[in-house]
Image 1 (cartoon, rainbow, N blue to C red):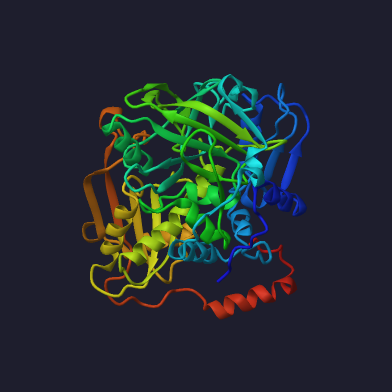
Image 2: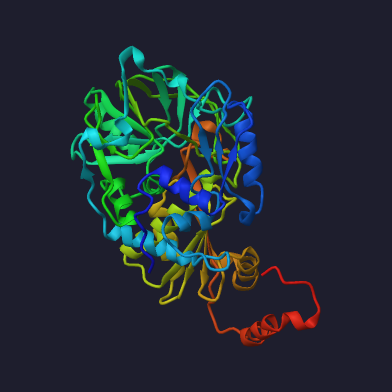
Length: 480
């Protein structure tokens, strides 16, 4: 097991590490935040994973603040590096990422409060009329289509009014003016549960949006951590030490002290205003809806603050990568916690918008695969439209191997499960808007139901021997 190091106490330490490794590229030419920034980021993510890197735009026209993209999840290798997992010959042990996550969920570390004078995010404090978000280079992520500039990497912090436990999640935020942000709060999300509690009591809800926190905070904020668990304690589990937090200036919330920026505000009950459209992770434009609005009460930020953004839209994107990894890890933890044995690994396909999940198991009882499907749908009710369960002889990260298992181990009338009227997600374009919160799920049991003949291929030992001797055959190098 690899435990995260504590060298990346903030985003800046992590960026410095990436630069040292040649994985952070600076763009010094002047660029437009409303089209060039997103297009450059998109082109980098269209490269094969080994050719991707983080970007820092140092010369955004009209602004002095730099913007970073692809800073955590350009690749799984970059994500693993942040967790202190070694990369050997350009490869990582993918299971080590999940092991760290499962360990962090089981061994959460309480936050540590620090004084405002020692919190970097308090180096500049703006309140009242001095609050102006438009002074910072918040990008348009889908040029010509998004309704406005959007906060795409904002870690939104709320507090359950009954338990006092905080919640932290990443939700899109539409800039509606210098001191107003429309925030998407979706059904079936923890943020919605908390918001509904305040509205049922006709109370305003304190809220904070954290930009550029330590990398571990961003990692946990995009995951579906069980309700009632403070994501910052899971972040501490990933980091191997407590996340340092500080009290907000104007609202009753605690935020990561080593963040680049904190937007404080309140959400008034019953208020909804037009928000969207926005280019969503399904690869289609999310429609305009009526969303709650944050009335900003304070803005605090570091000297030389850096704006961090996660590009969403059509996968592959940084947003999809970090969400996929968190989902895989949380599913492993949830299936284990539900007492389902024999679950070895989980893979969320990078082009599936978190809708296609492959689970590798060692079958142990009749109906094992269907039990696994039920566990996945319980843990992530508005994702996982397709769950494929395979055996331990399948490489779930290899699409060709998964396809072979589907072809040779599935009989549709026997092995396919359809769940009707399940929880959907409003952003899924496959359902009409009026019924989009209801959907269906498909499960495929691709495990063997009887004895099989041996595979018709050379043994692994012989194949490995040929690879070791490849240079003597006078053939071009193998790609893998």
